[in-house]
Image (cartoon, rainbow, N blue to C red; front, top):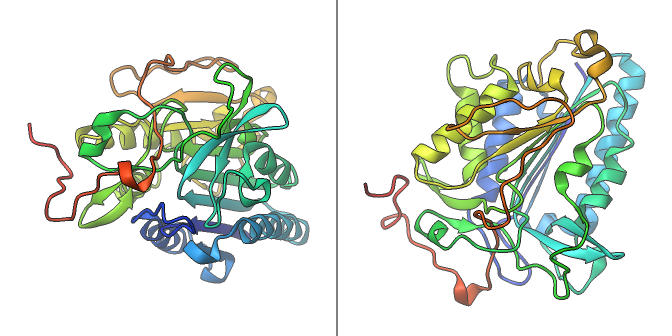
Length: 326
């Protein structure tokens, strides 16, 4: 099967707002794709830290989409496409619209070319061929306020919002960039929460990446539906003492089959193929919502954002506990 994957993990940032687990995330994701999903290693491109500049991420993502189109045309078959980003996120205002951002190594809020907005990503993904079966994992955060008790269990992966951002303005989120048919989008948290960079299982990791890959590697995890995998991932994250709630967006057919499965989901999708739903992964209320409806947590709920180095508190492995006391 023709496959293509781009994995981006950024520990080190040009302005020293560094993280610790992002490179481990993409290493683990690459092993998973190769050994569980039968991707050839030559079809997996990895960008880490200094390699992952804005220009290089943009060029690599455009090239990956181009390769997916070429492989689809040559094989006349389904193509599996994966984009995994592990690093900082932010929120900014571009052309009068609030947008979610992913932050490359050379991110500078004052330089427009130094980051990719949700609109930039949507434009790139619009060129994916209809034969592409796509998975986009965003282990970063995109909100304005910080939930202070997150510092018990990890460092948030978000920068402060850009100056002058209108909190009441229209917003284009990362998940909106994944709204076209054939893309399943998994985010580390809701838009008003934070995703943690923490010490998990003996090494620094992104909490979403660590627990998602762990869930997929359990017996039956790789054959479970994407919907149930995200639910169980959230349950494990909550049990470990983290407050973030992963979410997944995609069509009914994408959410009700295994991750990157080999089956042709369009055969069973029918007239519902152009509808997408947002799955709330709360273990307390595992309710499915009809197509076209969404439920969001209120603005006063928890959120996820990174602070300048002077405000950050990190703990060495010997002091940090994956499971908080009590």
